[in-house]
Amino acid sequence: MRVGTVRSVEPFPEARKDVYRLEVDFGEATRQSAAGLTDNYTEAELEGRQVVAVVNLGTVNIAGFESQCLVVGVDDAEGDVVHLQPEREVPDGTRVY
Image (cartoon, rainbow, N blue to C red; front, side):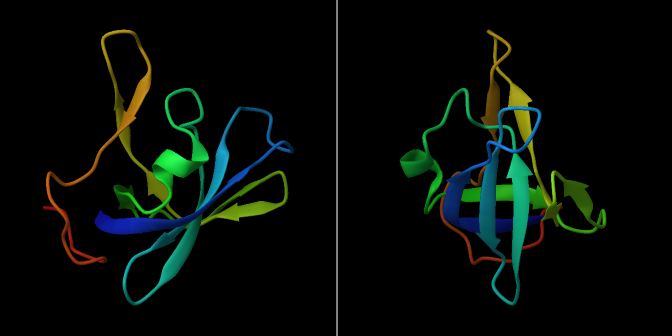
């Protein structure tokens, strides 16, 4: 897993589930992800934030979009997804261990 910064967020109406298309900058590489964060986060809230993502799972094709990493999160008490992020800014690409 690595920490990256969300550089762009777009709606993804072609997907069966309500997800965003994200571009996440991991320092030496930028990857795209289909992330189900639409219930709790607006596009403006996500852009520029750091997230934790799994980057070595391979790719998944979702409605013609190649998702190259998995942004991770947890459910809160109401069952809504909360994305994980470092408590303070770290360099993009930092390994999570």
